Amino acid sequence: MFQKNELKCSSCNKEVTGNEKIVAFLDLPSSMKMPYGLLSAGIAKCSTKVYCQSCYYRSSQENKF
Ligand SMILES: [Zn+2]
Image (spheres, rainbow, N blue to C red):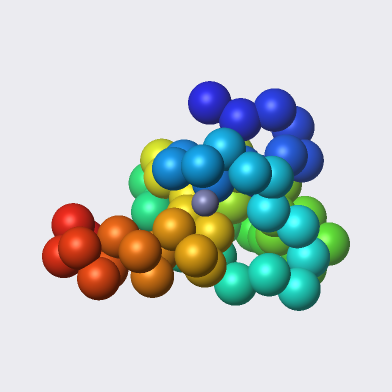
């Protein structure tokens, strides 16, 4: 779904980077070893949906979550 080390918002397709608040829906692996530096890559690998802060707020205001 995602390019390696690349997290994109599922709504606006904006690439989300460090120091940004996001919401992600994950299929949690049975065991997860996730060094801090690999966190975004791990989320990109495991997540089914990622939302940046603005899309999350917009969606939550529309009660779509
Ligand atoms: Zn977005």
